[in-house]
Figure 1 (cartoon, rainbow over the protein chains, first blue to last red):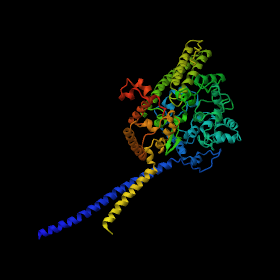
Figure 2: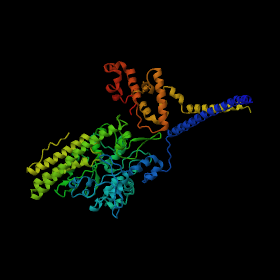
Figure 3: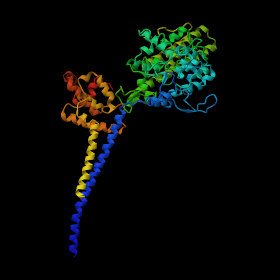
Length: 481
Length: 153
């Protein structure tokens, strides 16, 4: 009985096993095929996506005209570039530059709740250098393009002095205002704007620098819109043997990738009673050329409160400094590093989030330099550290000269002897400021920055000698290469 | 219906579907082009557009294709390199998160260095004769100075 049962069970087993085995194989094969199909389809869709990316779609959503100022409208046609442009609101520090977000209590005169850190608090020697000038009252680290108009409108400098409309040229999208004020004539409108008081000129503009300031609305080609640059670059080109240089006609595309930035990132002054914005490049772009120009036209920015010197203030001469550097020599443009080409899908676009290349070492530097990001950053910061050390030496020296001059004045030194020392102060201070105000801590032209700071210290030294020895007018062999 | 027949149909459909999708993907992605020497194949996916554009304008584009410099000059080495690079390139391009600008790996750089010497042997022998092969990189690198001959960047 028991044996019979066993046989039945065994025979049942024999019939069941192959059936179950077959089912397992089917399930397993189907499962593997199922996974393979999913992987295959997933890969297929990924490849389709990549192929779609490669088509570089451009959708013309709106028609742009030469009067379209609002970048948001341009952004409908060029969303990727507009995204980058909007990101210039960020406040990120690098070791020697960049702004920090500092909170402040908004009031009637200044509704900003966030500003950048005060450079005057960071380095009180600046107050001594600029004593008697509005910059000694309020000077903060520059912020991104997005803030240029607000930071100019609400700085305390506006309250201690009457600024001219000229400031608007580079703190706002001024192209449409030029056209409107000049009845279509850019230069005429430019002259009108310069003549206005700041508050009146401010009403002519609504946006910080916008698409239209650098791009032609129909072709998107780069275009210079600032008359001051158009005129000044002629001098630079003439010195190179190119006569009648018309920037929008004669400049190469690669040159334009620097010139559109050079429209504003330059040294300038307001010429005459008309307050015409002028770039002092008639003798050349170097600091001694610019100083010689200011001497020849008898320009001063203000009278130094402690010493009575006819002082000059340098203003962000990035274009001038960069032109003395190795990158300019190699044909690298501003945009190559500050607006590096970025891949968006398959599209290669210039990153319109303009900022320090130290925040995008891979895209900005590694395209040409085959070294690690850390190594490249180290090289840059080494240059900047050395420049910073020299800058501090020159600053200490200058503060001493100013102190010496002040006490000599109080002692009643002759005006003639004071005049010689004051002239050295004017030069020492302008040379130092030429590196200090330049936004790269020497990196745009390391050797040039070091030379300028050494010359600044030499002027300071000669200023102190002039206070000691009546009749000393300095050795005139200032290094001219 | 016969249970066995049903199983076979299921297996057949499953295998057929997977094969079909696989083959279609292969053809759609121009998989066959990777067996060729056509430099266009390297720019099938757009991540190498810049290198391809650079090569088109380079001094070497009339005499050397991608494979001439980037794969070893023997059958096994060539197809092993193609297979290995093909796999990893696809992997990173599909999953993303790779370093940009793209950079050559150490092994591929050595392959490239040797390719320079494959053609220019007669000229560079006097330079390399004193340098052991394994020290090519530290001591004598062709592409360190002649970086732009193939493609700048």
